[in-house]
Image (cartoon, rainbow, N blue to C red):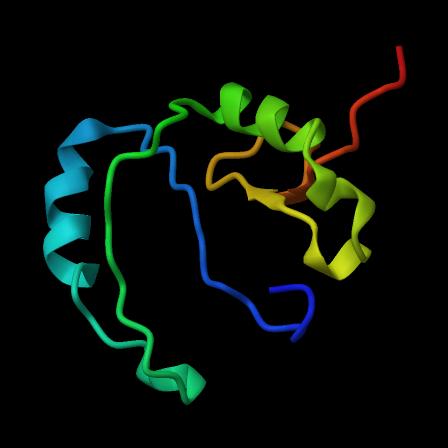
Length: 96
């Protein structure tokens, strides 16, 4: 929510091992976010866009990339490539 400078709370998780999905779902789905003084409740659903590369591509070309840097999407890799950071901002799409 850019107008109120408030996080809406979306996260896209690309599980690298499908066996962990059910456990994750059972732990987090319908849980209240008590740490953030919010009435929000976690709701987990399959995303329309599947896969890390497809999500990065979607947001590279999104109007959100024109917003404040602090509001842009980021990628967290739990198993980063050698020499890479665990966290990297999604780069804006290249012109052309």
